[in-house]
Each structure stands twice: as C-alpha cells, then as structure tokens.
Image 1 (cartoon, one colour):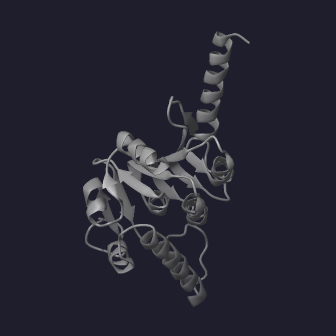
Image 2 (image 1 turned 90 degrees about the horizontal axis):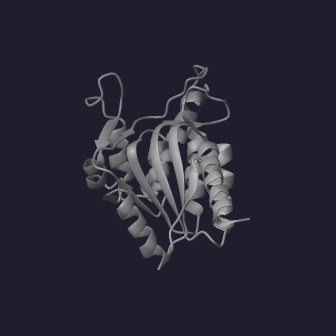
Image 3 (image 1 turned 90 degrees about the vertical axis):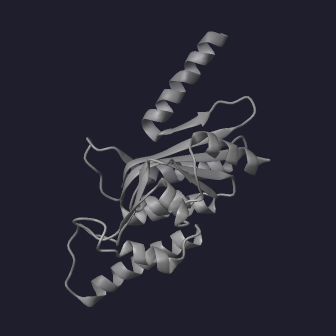
Length: 224
C-alpha cells in the first residue's frame, strides 16, 4: 500500500469512527489521546427517534473499556454537549469513566444538563467553557408511576445515588447540591438551578473554566 493510499484509509476510518461512535484518536506526534463525545440525549433501553442526536450507552461503555485496555492510549478527552437522558444509562457511563485508570479530562461545551452533570464530573479533571450551562434538577420519570409510597421511595433513592456520585467526584457539598436541585425560584416552569461556566466552578461542581487547549494541557500533565 502506498503512503497516499494509507493516508486515505486512515481518513476513511476516522470518518467512520466519528459517524458511528462520535469518537476519534487525536493525532499528535507526542501524545496518544482519544476523544469521546457525549451529545444530544443519553439513550437508555429504549431507542430514540432517528431524528434526535443521541449517545448510546451500549456503544460507549464497550468503547471506554477497550480504551482502558489499549496500551497505545495515554489519555481520554470527554466532550459534552448533552440535554441529559436516561438516568440509569447515564449513571452507568459515569461510573465507567470514573473507574478508568487512564488520565481522563472532561469539557462541557454547550451544556451538561441533568444526567450530564455526573458525566461531566466523572473525569479526573473537569472543565467548562464560559458560555456553557449546567442544569441540576430532581429525578423525573416519563413512564407510568404507581401512586404508592414505594414508587416515590425508589425515585428518592435514585436521586440520592446521583447526589452522592456528584458530590464524591467534585468539590460541591451534597447539601448544597440538593438545595440547588430543589430551588423553586429560578426556573419558570420547573424546579432546579441553571449554572453557567463561572458559576459551576464557583459552586465547586466543575474544576475550572477552560476549553480544549486547557483540557489537553491537563491530560499531558497527568500523563507525565
């Protein structure tokens, strides 16, 4: 295979990786980092409409496991622009990211809302661009709910799992996070809080304001 043909094959594989998985190895002469994106809605056990952007947990989790086992990958960059989505699927992805031994850095770009919050803080270091926002609110369900105390107890336990995960992987206290989650005076038709980039950092939710450059610098520092 000629050099031109090899380069064409690599470009084709890169396009396929972006189209199918939203993931790509970052070409660099000194670093071997891999970029993973979490965009749109996090898809759970039910398929979303084909017109919606989604992140499939059954694609992303095996990819993350393979990156952890790949000796050629020195760090993982996680880019987020998500509205949230399936709570259990999102929390499962967050647990996988948090358990990786390789250097991991996340960047919230457009938004990291709802279950996107634990996904953002799961990395070993987190960044958010100034114009991005993050929404914290109580757990919701769109399915049938039996009007019995056990149903509400289950939702509360799930909410507590999320609160514990976020507080244990960031610098925000669980009590402060719960108070922001249950605010009734900020959102017009909802309960919760919206934090922009600087506010998310000031609250201790995200480590620092920054973008791709700062995230790659952090990965290099972890690698070294």
